[in-house]
Length: 560
Image (cartoon, rainbow, N blue to C red; front, side, top):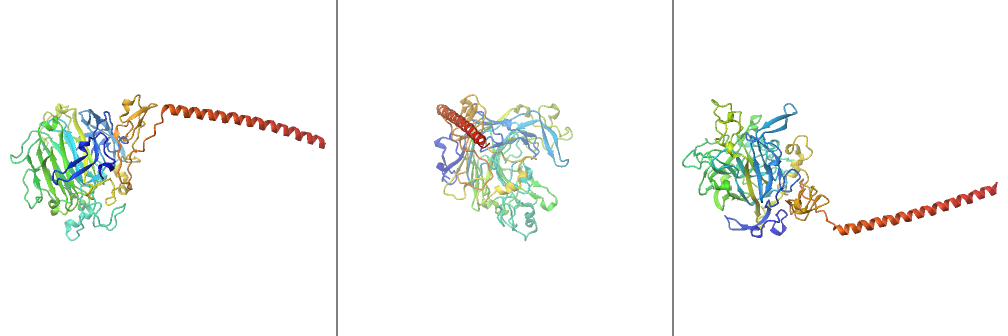
């Protein structure tokens, strides 16, 4: 997948960024995907971009207080800008119980950009340059840069249930607890028959790798561990080590948590405040735990004021590893030996990128909520009545801007485990998604992703058409650009695969105006000549018919 053969490289990426060297192995890797966000005014609505889709829906996960609006994401000054505001937003949602649409109101708007089912990769290095939204020492925002397996679509809980964050390819029916994994993992290695292109006896799932989850604030809980503000870097995976998690705020023993193969960098310590989740289901044997193997790295004001580089080096498979870096310095690392206790694996699923800012009552808000003085159902930072339930000075954060300078991905052309595509031959996802499409899209929708427009946006001048020109009031994209206004770099997988994904169509050929006029004139003259000739033929034919009728009439008279 070398540079010369990569269909996802932004033409605005500089030559100096076409390769990188692993900070761990020293091996050179080639650029295979980049987005420099260089064209101002770019939008990411469904059907606008080959790499990304900006959600326009409510977030039903993690006690979210925000609504994700596609209007909150654009490009400006060479940056991707995800804006978070404290404002009322009303929307309709589908209620399964009443089987009808109902109305809901939230008081925060934000944005989530995701590459689900558009651009995915397995293995390599991802590097993101970003400045975080808000302020370092005021809690309330939850910016994140993360990866998720393509078999689950973030915020679409029907797609992620029993799929997230499994990374497990073992069938064990001899131990009672592990035997229940077959009921908890949607695509289990115990299944002889797995439909929709899923291989027999092969476990699949949608693991999560958090490159960054920032927790601003100004609290120190333990002098031996990193306090707020910090950046969490994590692998979230199932199955869990046990049906319980270590006590929050306390250092777990080696018997109850992961310890092999783990490294912590400078100003980094074990995350004692989050060990994973529990997903409860009926019957109870379908309830399962997730583990978060996580570290916290100390942040400063500069991480919120200036651009810093967040990097993940990911080698998939049995001998794989994950290594997180900030500005070239190691913050956290783990490898396949870390996961030996649970028999899970370093992710080898095709994964997509997610960039977002969330607001959650579970992230940086007073915990537990002081019920003696608050009703604990008021979360609006503008409302004085909510002051005891929200972080101190949270109202000063808005509007908040998550500014991303670039996203770049590198892979080793000699490493066969490094792949591009959301449905590679050895890890297909396309038929599964198509066979369960209702789980990946809005109620009553006909498609989960619209095909990407290649030009056609209304324009008055070339300046409005990014990498294209304005002809006849519409943008016509030049090679390498797509979207209605030609502001998105084109993108396509290098190897054609069976995949239900919409990419850009070939460029519409642009005919010079003078040539068009000549051709049109020639066509009009030709039509005129044909018309005159046809008229002449009709006239001659009419004359001949009249003559024949006269002659026939003479014969009849003679017979009489």
